Length: 444
Image 1 (tube, rainbow, N blue to C red):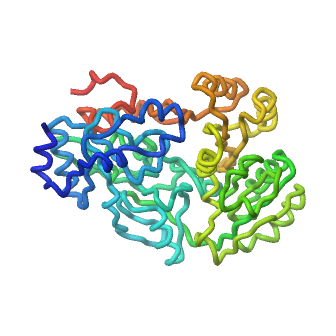
Image 2: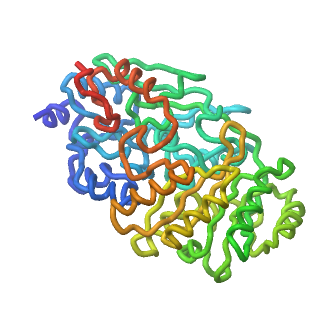
Image 3: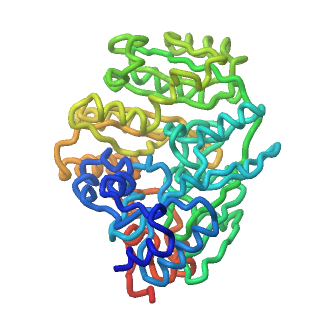
C-alpha cells in the first residue's frame, strides 16, 4: 500500500497513523450542524503529516501526485462546514508547523499559513499595530484556515470581509508532479479565498494591518430586540465612533453564555461592543437615545486579557447555545437593510422562538450590512429546509452552513473561476476532492 512507501520516504516519526490522532485531525467543528454530523462523522484520512519546511511540503505533494493520493489541508480545524474533513481518505496535511512570522512592516504582516491569528495579533499589538479582521476563534485559528474557510469577523464593521481589500497577496503551492510556488495579488486572489483549499495549498499570506487602537468592551442592554437592533444600526453608521465589534443577541440566547451570565439581566437583549476608548461619551449618548443601559464594561487595559466579549459573538454565540441548549443549531443569513423588522416579524409570526435572532453588523464593499447568525431549534432536516425556504421567501438571503459543497452554502463565490483554477493547479483533482461539485471526468 502507498502508506508503507510514504513512511519509507518521510520516516516513521513524520507520518501519523495513530487512529486517535487521525480521527482528531480529520475533523473540524462540523458538528455545529446535525446534518453535516450525520454525513461526515465516519469520514477519516488514512494518515496525517505536519510539514515543518517548504521543501518537506514539496516532497509530500510530489509523492501524493505521483501515487494519486488525495490531500486535505487543515489549519486548526475551527471551521464548521466540514471543509477540513477528507471525503476520500488520503493524507491530512496539517500546516500548523509552518508558523513563521516572516516580516512585519508599517502596513502589512507577511506570515506562513500556520501562524495562529491570536499569536499574530499579540505580536502586532506589542509593536503598536493590530489585525484588521479576524474570527472569534482567533486564539486557535490559523491565517491559512481563516483565508480558506472564513469570511469576516471582529473588525468587519470597519474593514469588511476577506474580499474587501484586506489581503495584499497569497502564496500557494500547486498540486503537480513538480509543485510550483505561485504568488498572486489583486483580483487573482479571489479564487483562493474561502475555497476550502481546493485550488492550491496556501503557504504564505500578506495581510494589511493597522495602527493599534485602545478598544473598550461594553455590553448595552435593551428591553426589546428591536431597540437593540435600531441602536446597533445607528452605531454602525456613525463614522464618528471607531468600532471593532457590534454584535446583537436577543434574549434568550444570552442565557447560554457561561462566564458572562452573571453580568446580564433576565429578559434583556444585548449588544456586545468593542469601541475606541475616546468614544465612550458618544456611546453613552447614543445608548440613552435608544433607551439602552450600559450594563458591563471591560476597560482598554484589559483588552484581550482574560474575559473577552468576542468569545460570545459571531459563531461563538452558536457554540455556547449548542453546548448549553437543547438541539440548537444555526443559519447564516443576510437581511434586507430596508426590511429587517418586516422580515423578522414574518419569521417570528411563523416560527415563534424556534428561531432566535443574532446579528453581526459588518461592512460589505463599504456598506453597513446586518449579517445574521440566528440560532434555531433542530427537529429534522426537513424542518430545517422548510425554515430556510421561508427565510428566502421573505427576502432573507441564506448562506447555508449545513452543506460541505463549496458554492452551495450561498456565498457569492466565483465558482467558474475556482473550477478553472482547480483544473490548472490540481490537474488530477487530488486537493480536498468532493468539495467542488464538478464532473470528475475533466481530470486526467
